[in-house]
Length: 350
Ligand code: ATP
Image 1 (cartoon, rainbow, N blue to C red):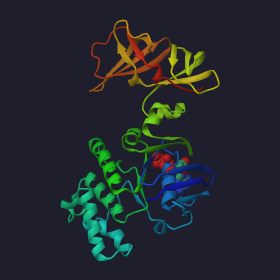
Image 2 (cartoon, rainbow, N blue to C red):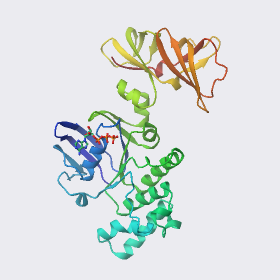
Image 3 (cartoon, rainbow, N blue to C red):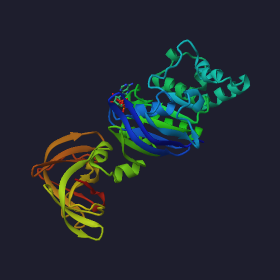
């Protein structure tokens, strides 16, 4: 298995700095996501790893091998494109065979590998169909099988689910994880969909304007974002400007326009901060509540039913805060009280 080290990679296109000093280590066998808004440099980074672009500076290492100047074929990193790029005139079996023939794998070994990967992606019964006789999800599986058959050091997926409808996309998320983990190859997966990343990744790098904003497990990014950008990009959140007005051990008290709140941890030196509170971590309470929790009373000004949950916008002074309740609240009161734990208040720089 292959570990990938991006050693201080910078990529410029004329005046545009697409990637700025990216230093990143991806572990062997890891399912690693590159996540970020449009134009942040995700595809450029993937293309650099594939050998489709050259970095302006920095090195790319597969284990200890410097592959920076190697051609795509020599570095054995295989890319699966959004469009799948299957040959329309070839059957599923012949499509999967293609990369093996190019690499001059002997015929008996070709048959063995094709059988194995078609079984892995559950496409054995469709082996003699052409791509136009398959659904989008099935074409996606064939594209994956074709890439896996060549046993890449590194499998590169560029928004692989973007052409599928919402339901199929959801089903394929866990399928892709199962397939990649069973095959055991190092996989680097580009998406701008944070839910896809949170549900599938071992670790995620969030990029912002060509730089690494944060690298961590889904849980780390969700529970301990280190910036307002990451807090806002990974899930929904309420961001409030505040000032630290009291400290007790590791916990702090923060004054904001929506009230005074306690946070269990704050590792910052300055007193001017931004706090992040997730809508789903606030619970609607009736009655006296729990004195150890933070509490807000507000006026619900907007309610949306989402099926399994309801989303409420509370007006608290001048601030608007989003609260998500599961199961949904149908009987919305005039005044709503919500509580949340000091553990769930994330304190960020201002
Ligand atoms: P998206 O999610 O929209 O695909 P992305 O995060 O993958 O975006 P990139 O395609 O990597 O972003 O682009 C990063 C930056 O580099 C952008 O400003 C883009 O315009 C620029 N860029 C990408 N490829 C080229 C190129 N071949 N020539 C010039 N500029 C480019």
